Image 1 (cartoon, rainbow, N blue to C red):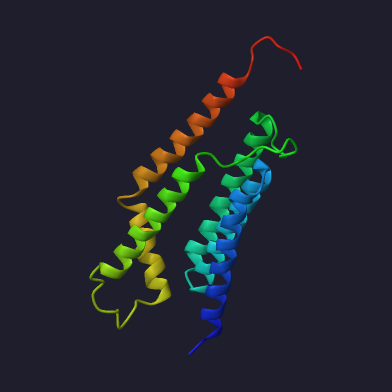
Image 2: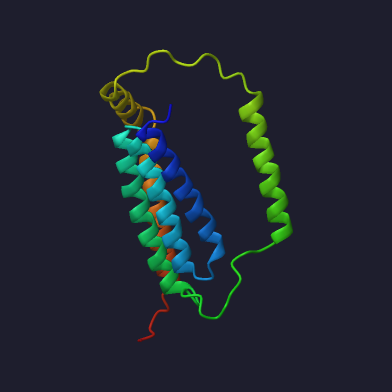
Length: 170
């Protein structure tokens, strides 16, 4: 039986796939970044539809910030961020197609051949799931997340300072 929740999950899933294809079909790095943002937003909306509000809002907030920063850096450092010169955004097309097909076949093999076990008869309440996720994030994963965040920030500052030419005025 199709419920409205199933219909919305399918709709947002198809929307995410549509924008994921658009990432590689455009000749503009900025449009590509915006398509990637739309893809991640559709995934966040899928989380919200599946009643995992924490993950949905977290996905949308993190990806919006990340894609905005990425678009700003692309406009600053790309020779043609608008794609007006007709650049080709795909490289090694045959190798990419072969790798994509092999990856899809491997993923399908894992899905079809893995012993998934019985379907859960009872899932914890949404509040319990969010609580358990919070404990996981604040427990053993916190050091990893904090270290990664600081490393990315340092890399961005280092890349900007290396790119700046000293003593040159605009």
